[in-house]
Each structure stands twice: as C-alpha cells, then as structure tokens.
Amino acid sequence: MKVKNLSFGSITIDEETYVKDVIIDNGSIKKRKKAESKKYSNRFGHTPLSPDEYIPWKCKRLIVGTGHSSSLPVMDEVFDIAVRKCVKLIIMTTPEAIKHINDPHTNLILHLTC
Image 1 (cartoon, one colour):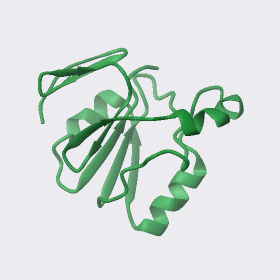
Image 2 (image 1 turned 90 degrees about the horizontal axis):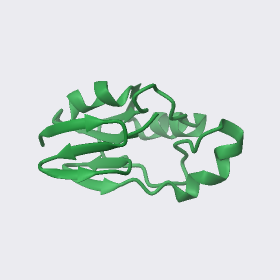
Image 3 (image 1 turned 30 degrees about the vertical axis):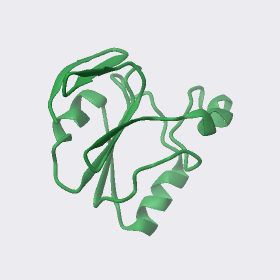
Image 4 (image 1 turned 45 degrees about the vertical axis):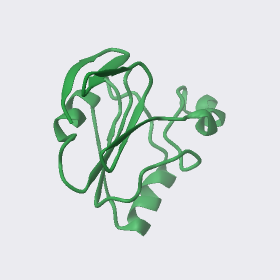
C-alpha cells in the first residue's frame, strides 16, 4: 500500500481518497464504522474507539492512529481485549501510524481528524 497524501480529514491510499476514518485489515481497506461507539461520546468528549465496534484483531500488532493531535480516546476495554488476544496494541498519532502501513502482521485503525 502506498499513502500518497494525508491531511486533516482525508487520506489517499493507492490512488483512492478516504474522508472518513479507515481500518487496514490484513491489506484490505475498510471504513471505520464508529456508530456503536457514539454512546460513549459524552463520557470522553469525543467518540472513542470502543470494543463495541469492529476492530481488526487478526494480527500480531494493531496500531491505532489517534489523529493529528492524538485526540481519539481508546477505551480501557480495548486494551484488555488486546491482552487477552495476545495482540500488541500500539497508540500513536496518525501521521506516525501511516509509516507502518506495510509492516507485516500489522493492522491499523486511522483517525483522520483531530
């Protein structure tokens, strides 16, 4: 995969531009569907990454790009699931996370704003 452009609110991967958060799941790009996590927004001041939404656990390492300013909260329950599944969960800014887009055995969740 080749990231051609990352800006606030969009990313271009392999000539396709996405304007919503994306999931890289074993080489496949999917839109992040965060509707199930919206119910936690009041608690965090932002829709967090919660275990209620789809998380691509079939990997050795899961990188969560938490946005340009690291504003995406990741619920503690997500960390707990990672431990149970023996997946190394790594949190970093989205600009840092995209550097790992082609790392073997690695899936990503990329927040494209804040």
